[in-house]
Image (cartoon, rainbow, N blue to C red; front, side, top):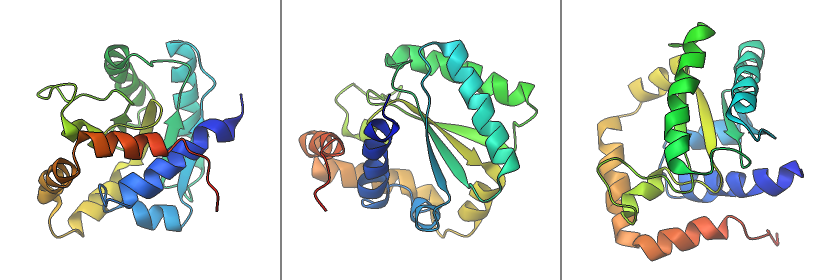
Amino acid sequence: MNDEHFIAPVRRWVEELVIGLNLCPFAKRELVKQRVRFALSPATTEAALLDDLAHEIERLDATPAIETTLLIHPGVLTDFFEYTQFLQRADRLLGQLKRRGVYQIASFHPDYEFADAGADDVGNYTNRSPYPLLHLLREESLERAIDNHPDTDLIPARNIALLEAFGVAHMRALLRACFAARTD
């Protein structure tokens, strides 16, 4: 498995959608400082993915220079319903490792669908990524970023309004473009 084949589209997604559209106002600083780890899991089973997730948690514990990890897992949990069920297991793992409250897991998936939205709702694109991934965040850093941001409560509504202005076809094209090879 060529890691860069999977990591490059996710990196472009972070750069061009997450940061470029300012969907997460906290992401740019960490990417610029090279404190975002893009990790590829070769897992093909949920058990193997849990092992990889545990290793990434251990890596974060041991490496304070890494602020956040995007654990990309293209070989498992490609079905969104199965992915959502797995998130409970991932959260239990945080508890078993006594890391709940230290880290949290944010969820991103190519077929992400909010519970109160239809499959074609443009708002789903706030959490749609090129591949299924688990985003490990340091809670202390996240709380500090939220405390220092003037309007975190307005971020979701702003993101939805922005995506609605773009429309589903445009957002789908932006996500697809993450797979295009760079020419620069």
